[in-house]
Image 1 (cartoon, rainbow, N blue to C red):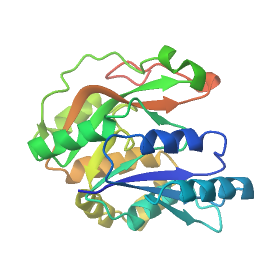
Image 2: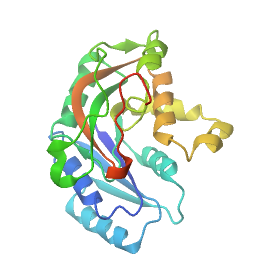
Image 3: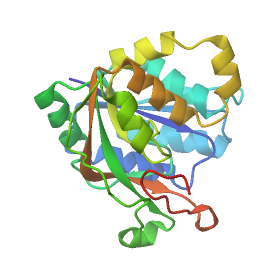
Image 4: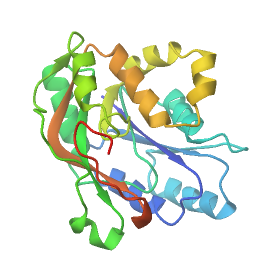
Length: 236
């Protein structure tokens, strides 16, 4: 089955090549890489076109006015053709070359609607090995959470680390169901605020089950002045 990797981007020409390379190097090869540019500079567009020539799996869509990351992510999903969908921000990286393969194998083995992975924070591309964990791992992450336990699980674990969409691989039909449930009032209120969190909550709501695995797979870039450490179960 095809995995769609959505990359919403706005003027990230310094780092997006690194992000795209980390996708291209995945051992799971049946992917499409969907770059949705949110009205970036001409320099960014030229970089995208260079990437397009390097890999037929890359697809590029361009907004002719700036609409925000939520819309770029949404359009990426609407353009996607995969059975499974995952999103990678344009300055983030995958931990290694086996992330997508591992997530896919777990999804298929246990017939899951989605699987979430752990992630690390980094602030220097040359010192990734020194990156920090964003929380203490205090809970069991190997238990499949079904729809009777999702609310209980979320009340314990759904801080900013596990309340985001980008560290999970999700079935596309689950995301379709969740997006149909969005009302105009909700979208207008939250579309420019923490879109990765409301995407995640919708995915949880319409999933019959999911699994969070004790496997670091996502490297989340944040500038030094923006780093903060989050303990599991708190937002401090």
